[in-house]
Image 1 (cartoon, one colour):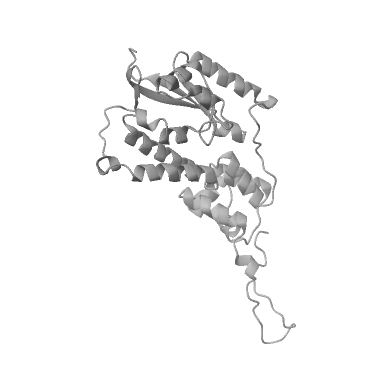
Image 2: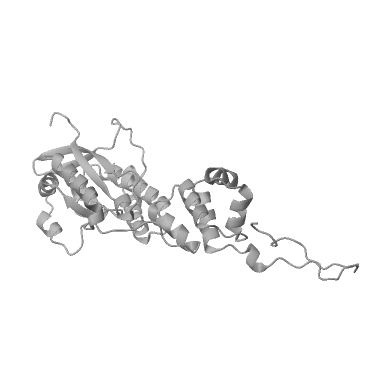
Length: 286
């Protein structure tokens, strides 16, 4: 039974002796394990009580308490149920399993892997069918993995060296481009920076162990903090249901709106973190 012996009193005297001595609790019985610490962290982050998490995972609240404090060890099935109840992304699901002493459940395949052929087919169809409008594929860290000819044309109109980007040793990063080459040609850069900051904060909340995402958030936060006082606070009155990105191009002003396509129920870390960004002109008459 879970926790047996962790809080019970022991008698060291023989039968019939009048005095009994209580053994102190073992230090190991009350010291949180790496798994217990992580479980508590995620439960707190998700704003769940032990009772709520226990109900969602189908286990008694006392068991959740014992798991967090290290007084009980989880089975692999219990870790899976807790990770699902906490809605952990695949990489954090894996981390919880490893902290409990089990093998990871999700792989992180390369996009060239034969197992992802179906995913690649869908992505390429999305890029092609979105022509002549721009579309691009980014990974979990906003590295640009692929673009269609519409995106190449937009980047060219914005004065970006498309050829240099495509021949770079590592894929260009969309957030880094926003902070450098793209920012001067975005007329509402303060709004776009704040929106990017909000998105990265959500990413960090989902993947708190990801140093690269945390670094991107820090860079964007520095940029937001450095905005002129008049635009430093988000006091915009929105006249559009979605954020428009307003570009200053060589052919004039261009307002765009983006839609993001994610793969539902992704069982691969690479696929889970990837999305296709479809860019449309905000004026449907364009």
